Amino acid sequence: MQSDRLLRGMHKVYSHDLPNQLVALQSLLQMLRMEESERLSDDGREYVQRMEKVAERTSKMVRFLKEMGKLHSYASKPEAVALAVLAREVQGMLRQQFPQVLFAFEWRWPIAVIAVDYRTFLQAIHELLTCLIPAATNECDLSGESQSQGNQIALQFVLESRGPSNDNNSQLLARRVSNIPPLERLEITLVREWLTVSEATLDLDAQAGVSRFTILVPNP
Image (cartoon, rainbow, N blue to C red):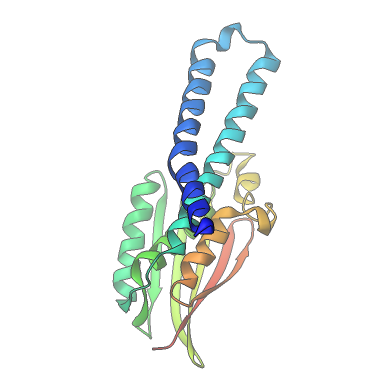
């Protein structure tokens, strides 16, 4: 069908051609900043920084479209997942991604097992935490607890981050997620779509320094 051909063509552009062009653009901007910075005026350096930010934002949009395209044909594979195993995986991913951060974890799983699509569910939690951990964080406490809510299981998380006390920008960086209008948070939208694969939903309250979120999953 014509619509299928159009979708395949669009998928090729945003999954292959456009990412390659963005990588080339970002590389050129980096070379310009590193090799020609001294010859640029203050305005010129500012323009380069602005273009780098635009390229970074565009790269996130392309990734969003690519992941949404994958979800269009993704076949859900629900399985029994031990929350203790999921938590250990999350801990390892965060420590690898944020080696400069001192993490403290506290887990309480009265309901120890849930039925979800493990791959996309883990992606969703990891992506969400990556969005919520501020750039200026030195220490981070993450707790999680499971409880029954009728025909659903509520996974309640609290993320508390602390940045350097002498960093005047730390509070601004800590609010970067909550300051972005919800419709512009592509990462959060992607998190919700990944959770939908497991028929799960997200309730998010992101504040400066402390974020709380609850993921509701069906009770098997």
